[in-house]
Amino acid sequence: MRLNKIIRTVIAGIFFTLLWPVWADINDKQVIPDAKKIVDFTTAGQRENAQVRKIETEYFSIEVDSTGGAIRSMRHKDADHQLKNNVEIVPLDPFGFNVYLTPQSEEFFRTSQWRLSVVEDARYITVKATLPANAKTDDGAIFPVDVVKTFKFDKKNHYWDFNWEVVNKSKKRLYVAEMYFISQNDIGPYPKNISSSSTQTFKSFYYLDGNYKSTPIEATVGDAGFFSCGKPKNLGDLETIKGTIDYFGMASRFMIMTIQPLMPLNAVSIVINNHKKNEIHAHLGTLTIEAGQNAKYDFMVYTGPKVNKFFKLSPELIAQNDRFKLLHKDLYKAFDFGITAPIRDFIVMVLKLLYKVIPNYGIAIILLVFGLKAVFFPLNQAQARSMKKMQVLQPKLKEINEKYKKNPQEKQRKTIELYKQEKANPMGGCLPMLIQIPIIIALISAFSDSYELWGSPFITGWINDLSEPDTVYTFSQNLPLIGGVNLNILPIIMTVSQFLQTQYTMVTADKNQKIMMQIIPVVMVVMFWNFPSGVVLYWIMFNLLSVIQQLYTNKIENAKNA
Image (cartoon, rainbow, N blue to C red; front, side, top):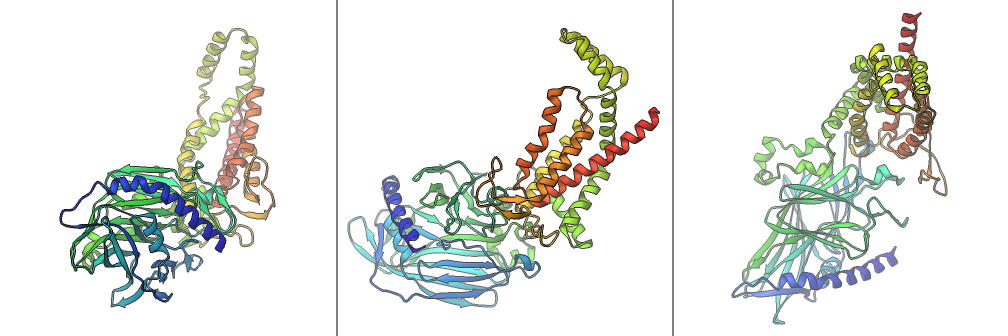
């Protein structure tokens, strides 16, 4: 573990050194009259003792480390959901919240011992990390300064303030042309078993000039190596997007950190470093520090679950803190739930209501399927009748195909004529399936990144978490085609249900089309293998109820024709 950190530090040094000429060119453009331009920060010779300060709020247990003046632990409390209580959201690397000017200053700030102090009042707990330093100017002069990080935590809120300031202890006006801010590499918690559903929502994001963008991150978990949830990136890749940053941050499946600057920023740099992660480096504007005064960069931060109610602040809370009036109106877009978000939110709301009646989300899913089947019964019944009618017409269609196989135009004309005569619609079964597409996408989203459904058990000992695959055995090697390392039972059951559904609704007489229809269950098991078990359970119930409805319709139609 220690060797890994040393290697990462060395590579990071090389990485920043390679990028430094690009950033140095930017910094050289800004000149402030009658002021000394800071080009680097170095140690002032003092050495603080290492320490850790622990604080408690209603929602967090936090540890601030004097090494780097960083948050090394941030555990989220949830008294209402014990399965989600005391969750660590700081990954391997601490939340550094570092502002840096050069590769050397970034290393200096990250490894130095900062002096910590804590002040508490009725509403806030404020942790200050102070680092005495020397500011080196472009003419080689040295000026004494204090660099101060301030973390101001609200005792009863997920929002908190952060600012990074320079206290000018000299008698000369100083300035930095531009600096860069990086809060953290990524945010936890990481799942115990890595799967596609557990990694696809790990991302960095930014809202720039009114447009939201996100990019997957390449994350590490312990010493298990690297896993990818995006296109491979090369070490040293750099993308700079010009514009005004409204907010930025990083998200895991269920937790998110949004950082909103409360001063103008110029651009955002998405940097791929030696951790193989897409990092957000915020490009800060000029900071001018008058003699004997201080100047700061100011941010408001949200850390916590992806839950809308925490983003909707009450008028009373806003009245208590004027800074809340500055929160971006589109901050909720950081959740990035996709175009099916309204359907997703509705499904989550219904499941939560059902959970209040029967406190088991697995049963809630089953009841949801019954409810949707009831709502769409007329439509589904029309589909079932259409399927039955098409099955009855198969002998006549086969006869037309044989008789006019050398005359495609006539075959098509006779086929259409038969459909009109029998009032059959070959596309009659498509609409109900099309309706299912946004529902299943919304359901995947709900169980992939919904905090409310996270950790929900169905059958203890088998399906312990509906947001994860129902793994019953872990193989030492990857499985062919599937690529996973787990044996999951529900996708196998789903394949059987899909096969039954295909058999009872298949209407084609063409051998090639029959083969294709029979391949569908195999394709589905590959697709659904690592899906959350809640999604697979939904699809199983949907298939089984579709088969029952088709059998019922066949019986009714056969009785009519008898």
